[in-house]
Amino acid sequence: MPVSREWAYFDHAAVGPLSGAAADSLSRFSQDASLNGDVHWMQWSGRVQELRQMTSELLHCGIDEVALVPNTTTGINFVANGFPWTEGDNVIVPDGEFPSNLFPWLNQNSRGVEVRVVPRRDGRVIVDDLIERIDSRTRLIAVSWVGYASGFRIDLERLVEQAHHRGVLVFLDAIQGLGIYPLDLQTCDVDFLSADGHKWLLGPEGAGVAVIRKRHLETLRCDSVGWASVQNSHLFSGATFDLRETAQRFEGGSANMSGLMALASSMDMFLSVIRTHGVSAIGDRVLERATRLRELLRQRGANLLFDNEPFDQHGSGIVTFEVPGQTPADFRSRALENHIVVSCRGGGIRASVHVYNNDADLERLSELVAR
Image (cartoon, rainbow, N blue to C red; front, side, top):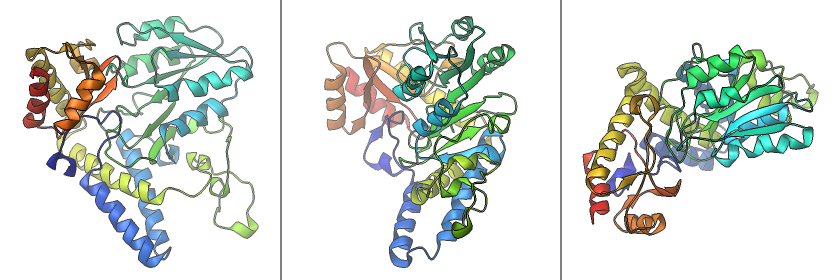
């Protein structure tokens, strides 16, 4: 991770630094595109298709269920705008969601859809609280895998099981967990998912993935279509409106080749670790690093704002805290002066810890708290 040469970087929950592999991919692409134009376009396209395959491997879903998207919001809107709502339907959303997982659902108010916002408990999303709000007109529950401010990781398997038992679908905003925590869609049968790759996956902004399970492909209307949405999409002069029979039908136009290729290079790195060390290796390391940071912060006088216990089940790499006598904004400025990167979220200071953050990084942040 080149960023570690200069910074103790704890802002992966906002914008992660590019991995060396992603940066090299972008550099190679820019050189190729500037020297050769579109001569190697088919090679670029092939690499983008490899990203689709890698996503399928990471999530244990069909390659035909993967759509490549510019951001998490796009995947959310595939579902919110394309779902066959009828007036009086409702969707359940926890309080405190990132706006991208609230506004698209509120936007359905004009179609007579009610959004039921369920309070969190000290940052925690309690599955039973969501399930209790289900009635005969509930169509979907939309949740974040990990809370962007609290760092609370929901009991996803139980949520899906309980929702499906009542005939309700589940949409997952996976941006704060994808690549870090294991998710097998064969056993945890999430209906829809979307995540950008610029946070924990260490890719560039503008490149992400979405999953639309095959059984729901015909349920969603393609709200935005283009040349790439149809079968035989490169037969421009004789194109017919014959939608692809895969989630790729939602990819209407030209792809962000450079960004998706760079994300593929980062995902390659993640999958190599998973193949060698097991599906939980990355998440276990992140939780160990976050646990150590929490201990150091307590020792140095910081107050942790959210108790995500038991931490192995509900914790994440996000640690939100306050420093007595310091506003979050002031502390962030002090941190930048000391080559430490954190955010201000959830009424406090948010540090988001990745696998490569070593003891020296953690000590730098905790020492600044002590000072």
